[in-house]
Length: 326
Image (cartoon, rainbow, N blue to C red; front, side, top):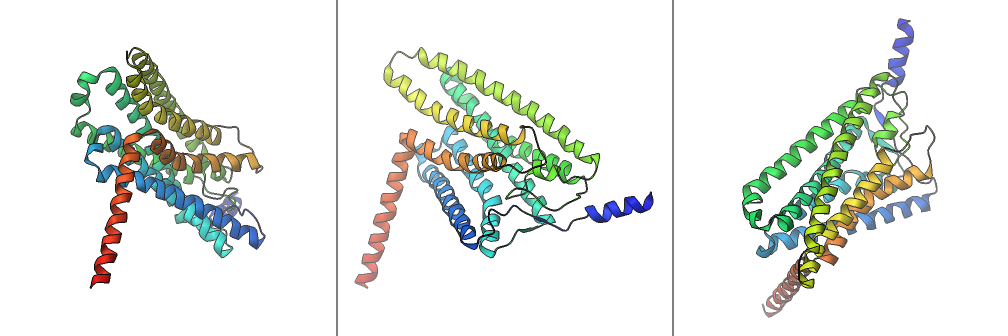
C-alpha cells in the first residue's frame, strides 16, 4: 500500500508542463507565431491608445473614462500573460512551460479576468448613477469613491486569483500534457491524481454564484437605464445616452458569453476543436474588441486620439526641421 502511494506521488510530481502544439509542421508553426503576433500588437496598441487618449485629455478625466482606462490596462495585462509565451514556443518549436511559470500564468490570467468582470460591473453602476440619478452623480462618483472602487476591484481580483490557483495546484498531477495553448484551469483539472481537485470545483461554483449576482445586477441596472433613456424628450439626448451605454453592454455580453462557454460547459477527457475555439474567443476577442467598440462609438475618444496623433506628427516634424537646421 505504501509502495503504491509512493509510486503515485513519483508519477504525479511534475517539474514542467507540455502545452498544446497547433501543428508539427514548421511552416504552420511560423504562421501560428505571426497570427498571434499580429493579434497581440493590435490588442496592445489599441488599448495603449485608449490609455494615452484618457491621460492626455483633461476633459476625459471623469469616472467613466477613468474606469475605461483601467479596463484597457487590464486588457493589456491579460493578453501579455498568455500570448507571448505561446508565440515564443511556436518560434522555437517548443511546448514547455515550467511548473512555476504555469502557476504564475494561471494566477495572473485569472487576476486580470476577474478584474475585467468586476470593472465591467462597476462601469454599469457608474452609468446607472449618471443616467438615473444625475443630480447625485458628483456626490456618489467623486474621486475618492472611484479610487475606493478600483482598490476593491484589485483586492477581489487578487483573492480570486489566489483562490483558484491554490485550488487548481493543490492536487498532484498524473500527467504534464496540457491540451491547451496555455495553462487553463479546466485542462489542468483533467490531469489531477486525487480528489483534492474538488476544492477547485467548489471554488468554481462559488465564483459562478458571485458572477451570476454581478450579471443580475448589470441586467437590472440596464433595465432602469433604458427606461430612463426612453423618457428623455430630445432625440439627441437619447442618442448621447445610448452611445455611452451600448459599448459597455456589448463588451460585457461578449465577455460573459465566451467565458461561460469556456468554463461552465461540460468537460470531456478528449480534446476538441470546439474547446480550442471557445478558449481563443474568450481570450482574444474581448481585449481586441474593447478598444474598437469604445473608439468607434465614443466621439470624445476619437477626438482625443485625433488631437494626440496630430500633436505627435507636428512634434516629430518640428524636431526633424530643427535637426536639419543645425
